[in-house]
Image (cartoon, rainbow, N blue to C red; front, side, top):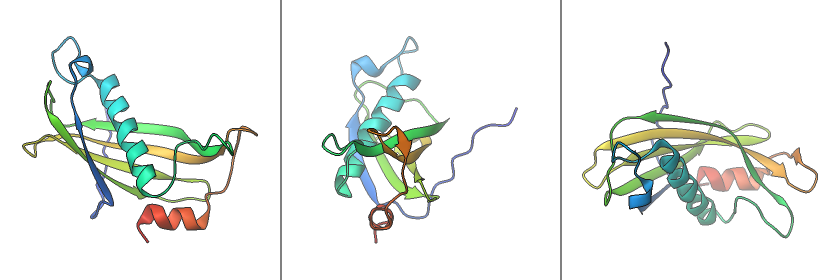
Length: 142
């Protein structure tokens, strides 16, 4: 069976640190897959804030919707670990882009690689909208 492979970019635009909470653990006493997705969500919100955006602007109804997600697990994380999440946007299209995440623990051990496909979305009309050029430039760090 083919496995998911998330390719890392050469450069990352953003990094943040998030602690593994006791509620993030599963029955195996390590970071659960559902909790990792929530941690990636938290990192994404911080990344978007840095580029002057948010997932959904409640005033205008414009924002993002996740089209897909891929996670490649590389190692375990445990309660008290500090996860360093580096992020970059790539694979831009008319309507969206991918966010790539590289997750390592405080010792530099790789925990996961992930990608979320994000689309520009108008929550008022419930339709995709073109990704603004200026916004795409900010996502690229330009």
